[in-house]
Length: 547
Image 1 (cartoon, rainbow, N blue to C red):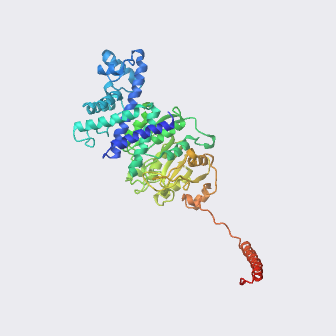
Image 2: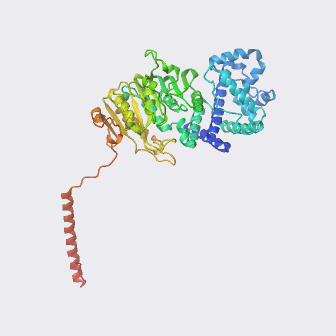
Image 3: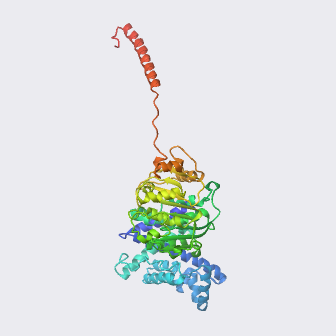
């Protein structure tokens, strides 16, 4: 399916969402809509695998109307009816092949048909189906996956019949919208991402909890995909592991995977504190064809580091990542304890202030970076110049040679805030002994609600390509980029305010006063000659002359 068709599918589903949610909060409706899209994907994937495993025994040639008369809304349901003694063996086989099982009555084909005929048992079927997927389909990946999807919520209706009718309408419309489109993993994954973006646009500041704009994500993903020690040599061949410790819906991690190819990353790790967003991330991974063995998303607080895997104190066993990417909450207020001063993540640098956890997030990710790894993190501009504890952390990072590049981005790029932000690129062992500054703050395309960065498509400037190319080759350009020595940064008290090093102001042209004076004298002389000539004509005509 082409990119235009992907967008068309996304638009179709968004229109359905906009029409059906009525008075329901957009965030609440988002959870229902995306959960049903996910169920469609799991079902399609499972039915395709079942057809492959059963081969000629899979009753795909039985007409649909015949199956329905037999009480089977899918070929798999009919096979279950005809082979009750073999279903346990079949499910054991499917757990080995596709790592999960969905019973025929819980498949999307059955759910959609129940919605079409407005079956009174649809709500109950969905409840048991989601519970089965969470608790029995697979050992861990789906645990609690639908925990935030409350099918008994009064937001759907006050009574069971009201809620059942609402779900019938929603699911029937989604099924109708999907009917004319291909539903492979790439298609549904792209539609899922598109809907997340659309819902983010309607969520305003809350969108920062789960969504990084695609064009910003593109910059980070392209940077970490490049060779860590020699970016100019091009992309890495392989990333063994990547982590995003504030992964939201997982779109940034998936962007890196897309950049590297399906086999270009060994394993994806993510962490997310918000339970709803954590579930979105797991669905998003699976919807994009990432196998459950290829990713691990943890629900927990990054700042308190409650992920057991990351609490390993033995340096030989502590996990390290080739790439770390993150878009953590900006200037998040936190409550560091006295014990945190001895935390291995912070003890060499100090604690970030209570008013802004920006450097706490940065140090957390940096602690788990491999020696030849690359970290790219989005932060508010304040981290570049604020004083106190942040100045001490910034100075230590600079003196140790860990800050590689500072990229200033325009204001109003995010749904969650209008402030300008920056990208910091950090490395444990970087080759250049300077810091590259890129001042891209005035390079953007103005949008209706948010500004955005062009990618060279549709005649727009390639802001993204220019930023990445400048980083890759460390090129210098007046009023855009400059390599700054550590001596100069030290002279500025380790202040990284970009305008100190790369000013976008256009210097006024120097005025050559003697030259200007001579030009004025020449002009006066020409005026005098012209007036004298004119007065001669006036005198001949007997008219008063000019003074």
